[in-house]
Length: 221
Image (tube, rainbow, N blue to C red; front, side, top):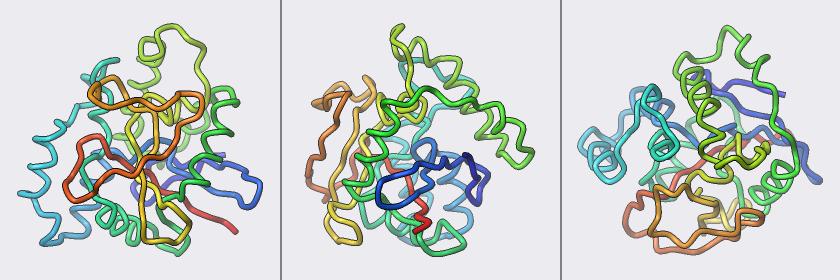
């Protein structure tokens, strides 16, 4: 069910009608992105640029995570071309990219009717990043408080609900982008999607947005 990306963070297998995918179990975290920045220094993504993103949306240490600040674990503030740049270089093989709207919604529909998964086998993997382990442990501890007593689903574990708005391609392989999700209450100024069926929106991407995160998919067919 689980595989690990190049930095030891989990992806999960999701069977879809037209193709199987592995998708990041969580939106891309600060830790993953910081590893990426160290591996791929770029004038367009230097420390001054990153400091500005952190000012817009401060990072949260996993040990300090609670039901109000957990969205600070996730990388936000990238524009689509920057998220796509990460996607292009993230995997060692082809087939890694941002999901398109249809794929994201298909993953959501699968996850929202699926029970939470057992993370025990993932924890038993010695190659799991210690950063990922801390994040997963803290989020698991706080999930009941985040959901305010509602029964969790796989969509809640993956923070497809109560997470960040995620950048997606409008059509697979296209050059136009949307955002979709059911953002955390941290982003109280946003109009939240229906948590049962999030719909994409088409904001302006001229400026970085502190509520825009992303996750990557690995297509196997």
